[in-house]
Length: 137
Image (cartoon, rainbow, N blue to C red):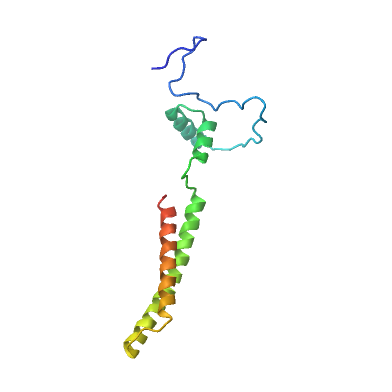
């Protein structure tokens, strides 16, 4: 439960509702941003801020600065990368088919097979990295 402070006002159990002031001797905050929202968005922001017992500006700031926050542009970029990698994997798969045909007719794999396997492994790592972005990891 929150107690009263020296002025008689109730003290918050887990800190301030707004960010702390800039300490003396340091320059103040250098930039101010304005965000325009629709009335419906405003109601949603007010409700989310009230649930967390913070102001809307603090909610927006902390949400934006939180580690691991994914924005739609990053997700779209990851999906574009996956499509690009899919096309490259199709090319590698075609090369593997050609190598298999060669190996079946000649009885051994050509030296270029090592390069194709290396390319396949490189693409597989890129796909795994891109999937991590898409899945929010």
